[in-house]
Length: 100
Image (cartoon, rainbow, N blue to C red; front, side, top):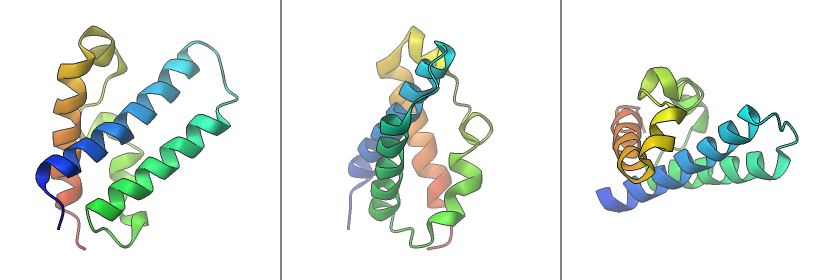
């Protein structure tokens, strides 16, 4: 069984992947295949460590991070280390509410 810290670290990787996509989009870059593939991989890893077998159950949370965990790119630009961990803990908590 994975520890809470392991779950938070995977959530950090996932949120970082989302953050990098959002930064590129804000800069006007839309050819993000490699970044999107990385995000998908991180999502799969996060589901695995959280023991979520039906990944579709995460859709409402992961596609709406702004609503589900208060995600804001501006916060990460201000203080990446503080906010990435804060968001990761929130994401782990929200995903932890899902039925396995």
